[in-house]
Length: 170
Image (cartoon, rainbow, N blue to C red; front, side, top):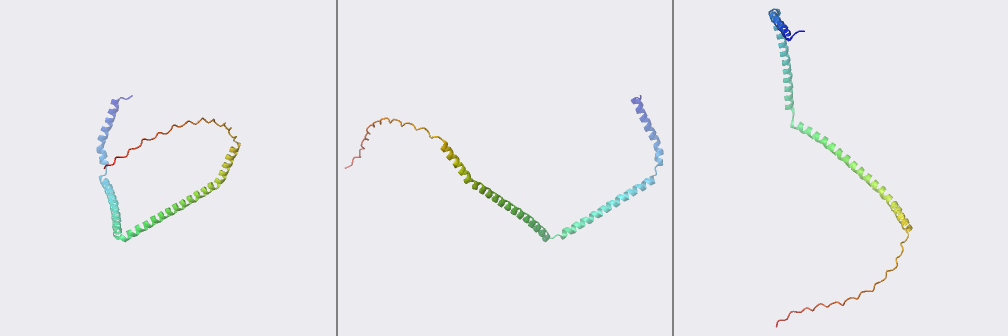
């Protein structure tokens, strides 16, 4: 088993060896080749940026030309056309709502007619049932007439005192 110290020492030795080998590695690098590669990448980037700018400028010019070509009359026509479309839709909705309302009224009338046409039959049946029930009900027993108590004599009414008329002045 290796200790932490041994592991660290091994890593430090490896780094020192890499640093010592660095001058040799740098001698192998071809600076001119790297320079050519960098120039090629830069030219490609410039070409791409130039193309993108040209496309953007062209689209900007087209947009400006289109904006200059728009007239108030064109906008009015577009708005009027949109308003007509919305108005047609609204009328369609209103017509549909009217038809539905009329259908509901018709359905309600039909239902009322059905119910009212059955009413006389139902009333007649109820009346017959009541009549049958009344006929089946026995009559209540009659009570004997109650004895009349002698009438109490009324006391004579008292006369109200006469009002005095005011005296006449002579």
